[in-house]
Length: 153
Image 1 (tube, rainbow, N blue to C red):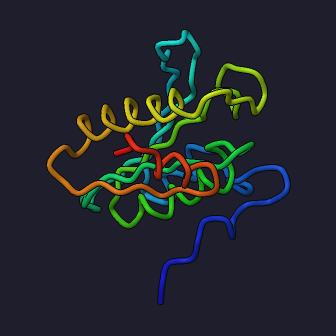
Image 2 (image 1 turned 30 degrees about the vertical axis):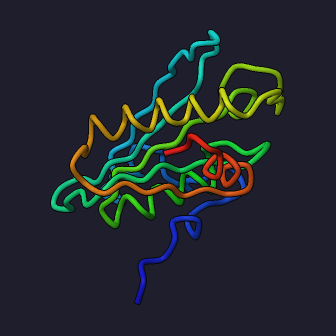
């Protein structure tokens, strides 16, 4: 039987249910980190990642790409925990104007720079965590359009 999705532990106040984030991640044998990166247009973009804790071995990398008006918290974050528990070093970025990133709320005047932001961050993440292992992309909605663009990884 498959491991249950961590969304089952969420409540209305927190994706982590009654646990503080650090305890939630430790309970799931997952390490979490986040940082802001600055893109070539000068916007600060929120990024985060999850890596498996021993004894789970990393089997690949996975980049999560959220949809329009979405962000990398709540459901996407819990989906990252689900995949990380399975052995994937997982990362996500909040697109400009989404989540904790700079920019006009949900305004993307040109998709190409957003695709470039994703490629840059995902490439850097893979190089740090598992450059020789397979890499995958998990996307929804706008994330699918980003993946279908001519120069996406």
